[in-house]
Amino acid sequence: MKNRIRVLRAELRWTQADLAKELGVSRNSVNAIENGKYDPSLPLAFRIARLFKRKIEDVFEEEG
Amino acid sequence: MKNRIRVLRAELRWTQADLAKELGVSRNSVNAIENGKYDPSLPLAFRIARLFKRKIEDVFEEEG
DNA sequence: TCAAAATGTAAAGCAAGCTTGTCATGATTC
DNA sequence: GAATCATGACAAGCTTGCTTTACATTTTGA
Image 1 (cartoon, rainbow over the protein chains, first blue to last red):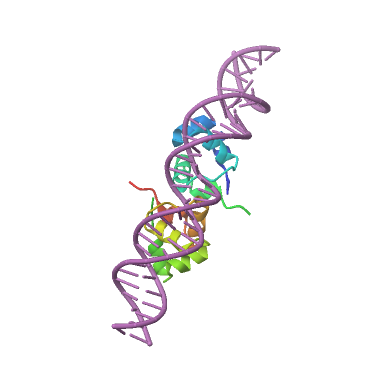
Image 2 (cartoon, helix red, strand yellow; image 1 turned 135 degrees about the vertical axis):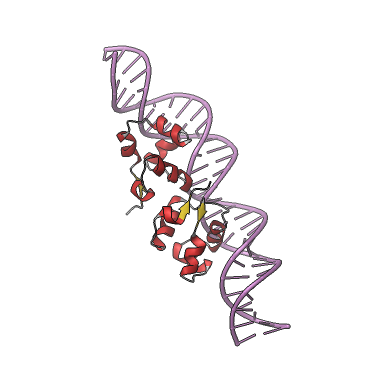
């Protein structure tokens, strides 16, 4: 899955640490997810989308 | 997370095995997810929503 | 320029998602 | 009432998501 987290985060001028704190996960998880190391769980995807006031489909996209 | 999979599946008159086959997962996974044993991964949630022609938010709901 | 902040990366370990296989139960239908 | 189908449930095992800790590299900004 691709995601637009880095862009959405940049719009708010948040650091990965800021975002991690808001989401209740570790900074390493945010970093790994932004860099496509793995996909977030569904509950975490919901929290991310809600935080950015977007639909999940507007934050995440199935690859190719 | 709650989900409406059982209802959506019933509308199509599919068995859990039918759905599992369409999704490319085991019947046990479909059964476990329908019964709330665990949440699907994000990629699987996307496949489920797409199969039912719904937004992820229309199939899954954060609890409480 | 130089220090601090932000990001990347990696290892080890626990938790959650998913598998195959198997069995029990209830509903269908012949 | 016997066979079949659909569902529920459980165990063992593998993979993936997430953690903490730690350190290296890049970016920022005074």
